[in-house]
Image 1 (cartoon, rainbow, N blue to C red):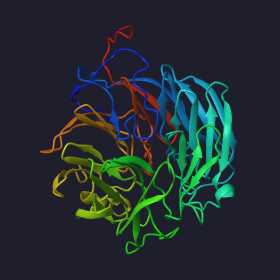
Image 2 (tube, rainbow, N blue to C red):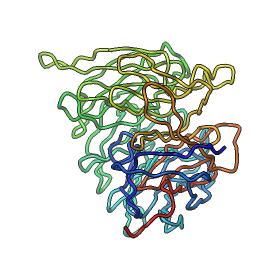
Image 3 (cartoon, rainbow, N blue to C red):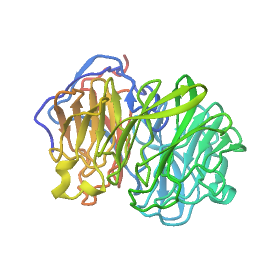
Image 4 (spheres, rainbow, N blue to C red):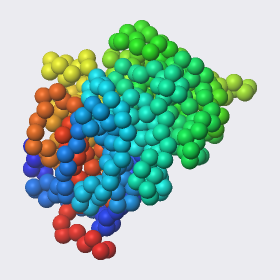
Length: 438
């Protein structure tokens, strides 16, 4: 449904495609922020132009963008994982390459965002395959089956960790009996290190700098399947990304099914959240007399089940929607929330609008939120005082009753990429006329 508002945002319009890359999960800086400097544009009353739409298989995988190409890990039936590469300007499929991955996952389809460099594309499939594709030859450079190579134990809903690329290594999560995380050579796929057992997870390892120390954080649980047992312990672990050695481990009560990765606030604080009524916590890392110490600054009952929040100054913006408040009689308990870093809720939309478990990114002084039920795209001003919807439009013709439009959005220049369970769309967020030669 189209808002009658005309949207005004402070956003750069370079006027050229392609724009800055979105080469991995949560974008170039890993925090869900679209890299545009300031300028002004408006949406016409009809909403942004749909540049193109292409059919895709069912799934939850978002896209990566590099140069003038869009990368999506898709599935063909219940037989193969397929990397599909589209032109950013026109949506034409330029090439594809795949591998056999027979089977059916609970909640069908691919899960993860590719990680793209100038030469390669790295993917993780739902059945535990880590694959490097060569962009020049348009073929597989190397391929690792984590089930076979590391006795990987498949998570309840398949492997969901997006590949983490750092310092010539691809860090993945086989979650085998002996090793939870592995470091593979980005060039060859050879094993450079294996961590000790650090638990099981649907979450993604993230590289951060805390207290001046480069480290990888990972949310996990000791048991492979705790179902919805809220009393089960959870771990936040830190490893050295160069060696896989444990730096520190902290046990806390959080989701027994970790999905969102930890989110760094500053050099000492980070935020962890989860669904299934497990809540959220702000943690602070310190080092005293050579020993690492974790302090829990606050804990709240609300949490985000699928996507991590966006940090803006002294506030967090999160969709606190999950299984328990998904029913219509409980939706007033969810919605989009603005939370202060003092642990106090500034505002929350409840059921007006609820927004489901959709994706979000920051675009200058606004959030772009994709409704997890019907794909409605909303722009929300970043204002800790109140919820202020600047505009909304519905680019998808179908409305699904299962509310599974959960894929993270991506952005390059003025083009927004979003997907449903049936198609991938490119939206031109800048108004016409647009001087593309500028």
